[in-house]
Amino acid sequence: MSKAIPFLPYGRQTIDEEDLAAVRSAMEADYLTTGPTVDAFEAAFAAATGAKHAVACSSGTAALHLAVDALGLGPGDCVVVPTMTFLSTANAVRMTGAEVIFADVDGDTGLMTPATLEAALARAGSLAVKAAIPVHLNGALCDMPALAAIAGRRGLSLIEDACHALGLPNIGATPHSALACFSTHPVKAMTTAEGGVVTTARPELARRMRSFRSHGMTREPAAFKNKALAFDNGEPNPWYYEMPAIGWNYRIPDVLCALGLTQLRKLDGFWRRRRAIVALYDQLMAPLAPRLKPVHTSAAVHGWHLYAVLIDFTRLGRSRRSVMAGLREAGIGTQVHYIPVHRQPYYVRRYGNLDLTGADAYYERCLSIPMFPGMSDEDVAHVASNLAKLVNG
Image (spheres, rainbow, N blue to C red):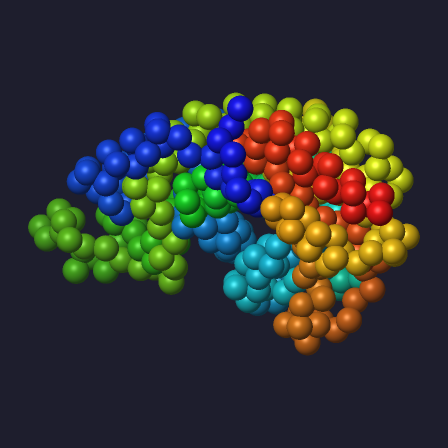
């Protein structure tokens, strides 16, 4: 049985003595910032996801920005983004100067589908749409083969926002996309405290991202342009570097990657515990239908980052706010994932008011309840019983 948690948040990290020892060891080593542990973490992450290349960085947002930039996207280009996602998926596009074309989602899963991608492309008309970013919301996978078929016909690159899907076999191997982006925030499948990773099968994209996460600098003599400054008697000067294009400081330090290495070793166990929690929730939630139903696709291909439920609050006669407040009084935290990004004031000013009915239907009913490996079966039962009281009235 797990240690009791006075308040059950919707998600939290799971840290043990092995993690603490790894961080302490890194703190006592020569490197606190970027050093050999970053390389080791990238190699382990690539092995865990089946990727050829993994590039670690400072956050999931940084990962998305690096990925969009790696494709050379910028002003004049457009990228399709599902509106049911966190702000950073769309913001990463705008950070390059490219424009966002918002796609609707399935009203019951929150996922971008082949039909909603096609509808977004039709709405874009003659605009130069160069890419799309499917989001594996809650850990449920988009239909990547079908989306890739559309992308192939339309000449689009795909970037997977897989921040919710880490832990599933080969999520990160990118058989249907150019790149896949992950977050290692504390509520995700594993943590580096803060951090992100981009995986790709294309070495040229990995090289570009490694340069651009560190100001766009290169120390490769073969790439130097200013030969007079770079070389002395044909030998590269040991202090010399160049910046062929501007980049960012998106580096991740060794000390955080030390935590990431020990967390990666537990990733499969974390997923199996999440799956067990899902099975118990499913059993306890079944009597609450049709007032409440879990957001499920195929459990066999689900990362189970979040356990989201759909509640018809109008039919229930209670607001979502009152349900969340009632659960909080019982020591249970909840969250809404997400407010449709096209509703944000910045994007309304830029693109106007869009009518995306699937996203509205999902948003109006969704609620994320506690889901993390440290929960005991008693914790799960506590959440379910209190939710039942509110739903059954």
